[in-house]
Amino acid sequence: MTQETKSVGPIQSAPRRFFRSQKVRQVKGFITQGVVLLISALMGSLVVFALLRLLGGDVAYILLGMEATQEQVNMLRAELGLDRAWFVQYFDWIKGFFTGDLGTSFSGSYEIFDQIGKRLIPTLLLAFGSLFVSIFLALILGTYAALNVDNAKGIATDIVSQIGTAIPAFWAGLILVVVFAVSLGWFPAGGYIPIQEDFWGSLRSIFLPIVALSLGITSVTTRFVRSAMLDVLNEDYIRTAMAKGRTRKRAVIIHGLRNASIPVVTVGALQLGNLLAGTIVIESVFVIPGLGQLLLTAVNGREVIVVQSVVLVILLIILVMNFLLDIAYGLLDPRIRDKRNGTNNG
Amino acid sequence: MVEQVLISKRVRSRTKFSQLPATLIIGGILVGFLFCVAILSFVWTPYDPITLNVRNRYLPIGSEGYLLGTDKFGRDVLTQIIMGARNSLFVSVVSTLISLMIGTLLGLYVAAAGARVKNIVSRAVDVGVAIPGILIAMVLATAIGPGNTAAITAIIIWFIPVSARVVIGPAVQVLSQDYIEAAFGYGRKKWFVLFNHVLPNISSTIIVQASVMFAAAILIEAALSFLGVGAQSPIASWGRTLKEAQPLMEIAPSLMVVPGLAIVFAVLGFNLLGDGLRAYLDPQQTRKR
Image 1: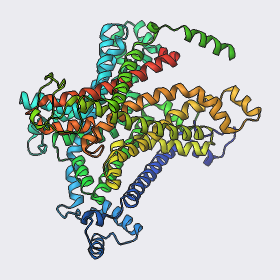
Image 2: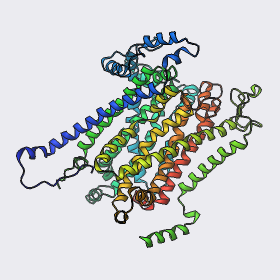
Image 3: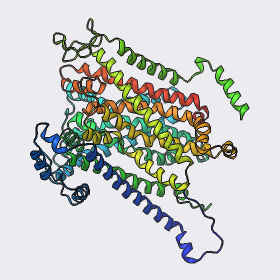
Image 4: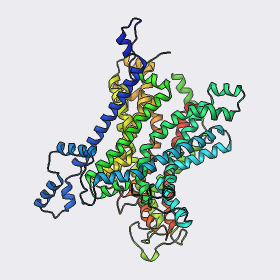
């Protein structure tokens, strides 16, 4: 759409034909996506770095308080390496980020890189767990709503998904804790058991957080599935399948679901950013030692390097997921790939 | 074209209240109620929101004189909720309106710009949309300290690419119409055409989007103040009320119910209003769905 399609004459030289071929275009598309990924990551890290340095004022002043003398401030600045030029600090940070040496936190209580690595696991477990749960549930609920579009069952599903969209994940988490942990005692009220220590205990400890996180995403995605399925229901191939003797339900489940799932997976996966943001809040509700908790304590302690590193990690996860999704999307649906690459081969 | 407009106007003026989409009515009532409560808070609240009254701590819902009970400091919960509505609306209205304005201008500019600009900005917008608001708020809270300013700024930054993306598509479509070409042929300048011909034609999309953004802003405001990076004491906020109720969940679980319900009804109201407006302003698209 954005690229111009140049008309190709009947006579082409061999190399030219090669560069216009389907495969090369596809690879060129991947490379463009990769470049976009790199530029976005670079820009993101620069913006975060700049925001924290320019708006944040002098970290040393904030850490030492108002009564600090200039000498104390200068000493702390030198100790933390804040007296160097900004680009030296930036490259030092980026180098440390990829070589695994980000130094210790200002408070000196932990190695930043090790902490991030340790806390990445519960956060990813929560985010991807909820992603799969909500896409799975949304496919079922959305199809159900689309099949029952004109009766009470469908309307009930609509109302439930509409309310589910409005419930904040952290409130859902609080209520779940009160009901299932405090009152009924079925699940632990908080904390996280590493999966390598106790598999079932670990699942029990992340069950309620995943339910709380999935609620909103499931509802949003259900509404997408519903509208995608309603589009699919009008397609010719559903009618053909029904003419060949399938029931409407089977036709939809066999042919429709597969076609509707492409946009649905996209929408669901685009929610990954929201899910990662949601884990920050949910970890706070369930006291799970993940990236969110680290970020939150770092924000309150003005741990600039921790904040920018955690933010960059989350940013990279989102960007890489979008990149993979873009590729997968093109592979799944050739029509989109051709449109994007500007080819028009009938 | 003129005839078409006249007909649609005539039809619209005949729409009876009962023919309006149900979602529009319910959403309108919820949102209207929310605004009334927020305005009411400036002139009257049941009790003073800040004064502590230790004697009346932990009164249950429905106590005499305290309709929704009291918290651990003996403050009236209903008062906290009313004051919280004010903060929620303030944050969401300010941030949504500012980001819509910037986003719309950006979107219009990009829609009328050349292919290269369009390509680059669209890609940037796609990336921007994927970045969660809470993350931006965390960075800003570290930089300028937690508070409403950090929350509002974060929501604005978060929403600009969202609103730009909503504008670009329809604007490009409108720009390809014949009457736009006619306007240019008549010698109109680019921004005149954009404001007088394109903007009115995409306004329904923007209005619907605004409603959805209000809802999202209320949700993120609550989340941020729950995390302690949004509104600070003594400003009442639904999220902060929930934060204060969290350690008390075994003593007074009911303290958690009311602020949460307030958030749900506010968000639901704006979401329904958005759906209803979409159905009302753009019936064709809704029927297609």
